[in-house]
Length: 244
Length: 126
Image (tube, rainbow over the protein chains, first blue to last red):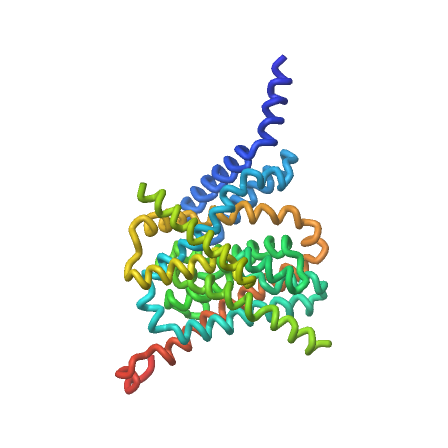
């Protein structure tokens, strides 16, 4: 008598957006608490932990990503207004930016070209298919931009979305350690590098270090969205012509 | 009420960005253009309005959360990633590290060259 009741509840739960939304918030809450427990160790990045928890949960329960995203989309949607909101820290840091516009511009153009060029080159060197090379090329840009570029140059947009997230996580986890090793101490330079290489996920990490690093990372992420859209398709044409 | 009007304003800028991008047919994402327009607005007004400031602080303080649903999406690509795991992992890992290191060093070096005000010229460079 009781079992059919549970069955009905499960049928209801796996079809409602409520489940996807709730498990996203619960997983993030747990991941964030774990992150604080480890004294904000970058290896315990809350995005990594919560994505791992959720993938494991979905695979065990047999819920498809499509059904999960019915709820997850409400969180995903906020990326748009959050991008617009980056204007505020940017404005607050503007006096510093004004003194630095030329170095920022140079670093940005070099960084975007290095990000795309090195990923195409490395993937080709290791025998990756052209589709994979093109899906990797825009990986350092923020997800919506990267997906648009990937489609334009012959990659797989949905694979690019996944690669963008992994790139962001890689940058967020390794960034601060790398800067320490190469002796870059200035939060401005660290922020610019983080935003160019690891877009929003890197920016989220940068805000945990300092608001100045976060603001410059947000600036670099926004400007590199423009720069990637302008530079990468042109660069890909050039590389393909050059290598026959 | 402050928070609500802040969020509303952010959405209005995003919407305007999306519409303009489509009208002009450019490949820049709408939210990025919205951010630029909000930035220009604050420049012209000479300050950030309090509701916008509140809403953006709230949204940005939970920025990592917003990437979680997209991150879970990598489960749909496990097959493809398994097929070409070597080029994908190595290219992604090393390219990201190269980009981080190179950009940070270029930024550090160029800001030393360009941003130093004139009086520091005579001093020995640290």
